[in-house]
Image 1: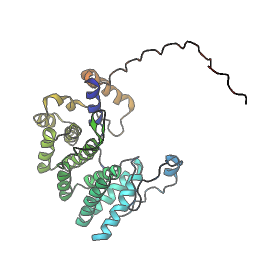
Image 2: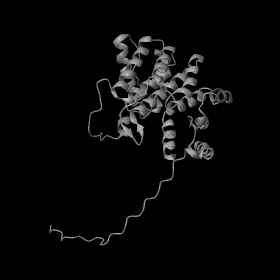
Image 3: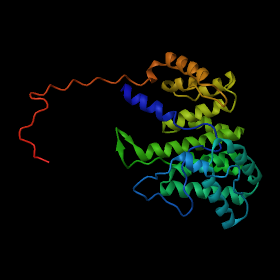
Image 4: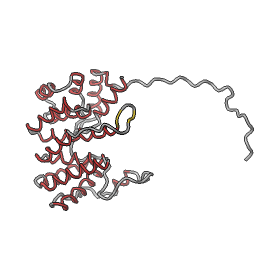
Length: 289
């Protein structure tokens, strides 16, 4: 039971609250799909070093041109580094009034999700949330309400397809909260208590609080919707931009002290192997070489 609860807490914390570029994410181009049985022998540091920084593709056009520009931008964003976040936000702001671009993002998200390219879908969801548009938030709300899979691969009692879609929906609910609009705030609060996945419920709590500066008023407002057994999510620590490891570790230590039930259980030692009757001996004479 304890190990199960630890896995739930770990998955709930897996979704990233910060919207925008996701440094280190993997995304594939429109005509590129993972198919190699062997990984690349090129280290990521060389790949990053070979890129020209601060040259994002634009987001523009209508119809198919908008689709192509979105595909290129999502691919670029998935390969970007932290230093390029400002570049991405500038492009996204300039395209926020283009309905064809917004529509292209929604199509890109659904296409990536359907094909199983969760990394690309996660990047595109973050970018659409970063645009902070009404139509984009409407799509994110619809995406959050998509039924979770009920069949698939079960590992350690967890349906992998369900957990993966929940992580994507957690990203979407963060985008809804990021709009900071009363109408969509009600959707976030609804998902705090109603969503079937704890991953999404926990992210909805965190996103609602973060977008209101973790104020006491916001905590009181969201607490009304939180399930009794999940009130500990109100205290979850978050590492903010510019924060040092020392200050974050102090917050984390205080959190774990207040909620010891979320700590990973200590590994159970295995029984020692019985000693061999005849160590380092063979039953037959080894052949000569």
